[in-house]
Length: 368
Image 1 (cartoon, rainbow, N blue to C red):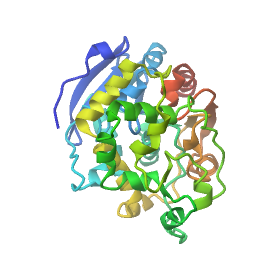
Image 2 (image 1 turned 180 degrees about the horizontal axis):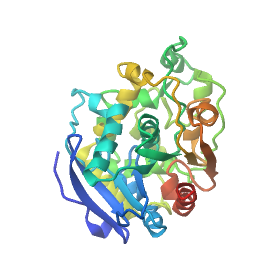
Image 3 (image 1 turned 135 degrees about the vertical axis):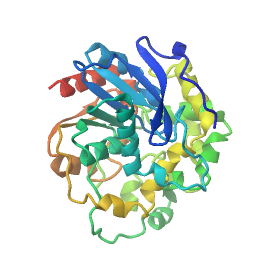
Image 4 (image 1 turned 90 degrees about the horizontal axis):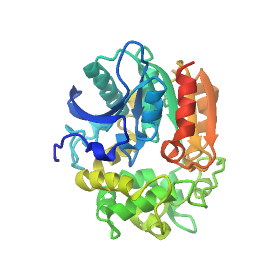
């Protein structure tokens, strides 16, 4: 993997800077920052999801800095210009498990000399932020979760369940779950070698999960059963015989969307064309494997007791993709949940689709 320098300042908004930080839990971590670190400025740590980068926070970072925060957003392990991780599918995936991702965040703060932060996570960054707050509330003193509800650690004893994958495959329209597809050996190749090319694959993928796609009309699901899960769009519950590049190709928008310009898309396409997607896919492999569940079960019954916030787009199916998680987050997992917001005009990429609203909610929350 190429060890490149910081991002070209020309692709960043005014006030957002790019740099590399050495000695972060075995990584050389690429970080975007805005504002100035000082004892008077509270610090926010922003954690991105898949397939995104620190760059996905580019719109909210200047707004948060102008409001008085020092803001840092890393390319997390497996992404972008952060190096020190292995992309080989056959390599050990243990470094990508939740506990080590929390250690990455702690290592970055230690390298920067920052004792405590408010942490914000979007998509797969949301459970990482949640585990940060659950494991080390002395460091991560408040948490905002975005687009992916956190239902708490797994129970020590899980009720036996039917094989959801066999049930999905047995539907009249045979289906499969995207997280297990992402965990398989072909997903990286399918997307990186998509017939339409990386750029058009990403454009269609981002479009289909945004508020721009009119079929995103989320609703609660009654249960973790094949007929209920099959109500989700095909970017979550895929047709059995299609890969993700084939899934999104028919929904390629005719023109760039308003919240993601061609130049911005080029940043994503350039980075993922260089690194591939396997680093991010390894996060899914850790989540779908049973190997790391016992480690998470050490925290069974523990709750997030620091102040918490949830933000998502109203057109985001991610809020409901795990039946009951949204409610359990509010009723049990987060004991100081201050508020939940579903923003109109936003799908899954809420901080890019509605940055002003997101920045305003974060400022109100973290300054209280």
